[in-house]
Amino acid sequence: MIIYHNPRCSKSRQALGILRDNAEEPDVVEYLKEPLDQMELVGLLKKMGVPAHDLLRTKEDEYDELGLSPDTPEEDILTAIAAHPILLERPIVVKGRRAVIARPPELVEELL
Image (cartoon, rainbow, N blue to C red; front, top):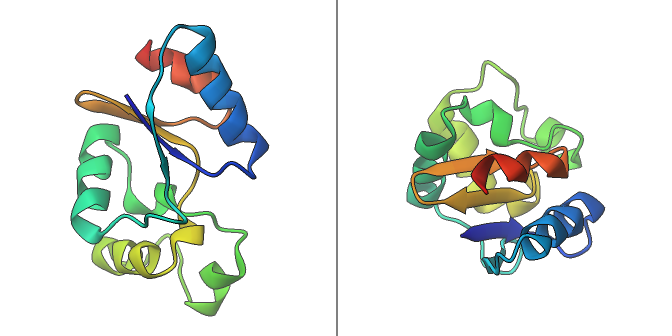
């Protein structure tokens, strides 16, 4: 398992806690320190089966500054996330061929 994690985020900490409470010790990737590139983001999208816009934190200043919207092309969204990792919704948990955005954190239980 992998968790794309921001230790300052309470939801991210809660999701990590749920995993550990269920005897899972995921690889923890602090994506703000180790940003994902576009190919990694494409892989996540395939595992989640969601539109690229779902990966975005729409309340971040960068979202408005970059003029992002639900109509923004997928490639442009992935470019924006790669350049501005703060835009990536968190936490994202991956297990094998599946991944979820664990908001609320209990969604991580789908992978257990």
